[in-house]
Image 1 (cartoon, rainbow, N blue to C red):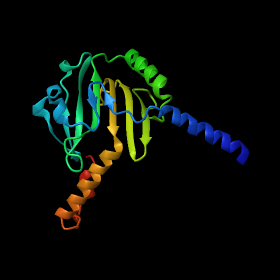
Image 2 (spheres, one colour; image 1 turned 90 degrees about the vertical axis):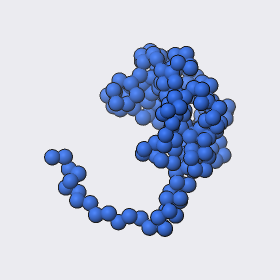
Image 3 (cartoon, helix red, strand yellow; image 1 turned 30 degrees about the vertical axis):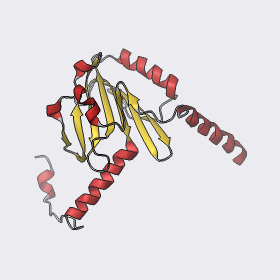
Image 4 (tube, rainbow, N blue to C red; image 1 turned 180 degrees about the horizontal axis):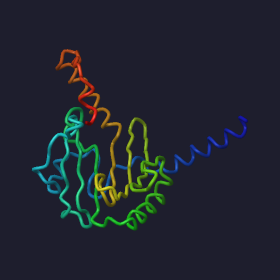
Length: 199
């Protein structure tokens, strides 16, 4: 059993190494993870820059589609605790919303990175999403290529690239500051759970 297991494990390691041979990707279109958002303000709707409601340790700026050919929008997400103004996530949405464009991009991704590690779509293929995970030392970058016909979930073709390890650092920093501001005590709130059952 051990003799057959070792070649299989070696094969898996070599496959992963091939995908990561070029190092952790950081650039998408004209944007680069880790750069200051100030560098790209000409691509952003300045009046949209605000903390993310569900992730207040991050701030989001929406991209002007007209500054990049073929792009209809997206966003740059940056930290405001450990890595202030440093870009931690890039999202791009394309004018062409067709599955044909998605398949062309998927072919390019597979040629460069190999097969994706994770399937993030749904069983009915209303959302088709593949995720590649790149790790180098303590850095992890996730790339998600997605096509959707779900009107509530970025319909069309989109790419999301996240510096996951640094995003987690932002969250840890926020949690620590939040605890310190409350003197280390959590709020003890009594809920009437019946109020939260639709009626």
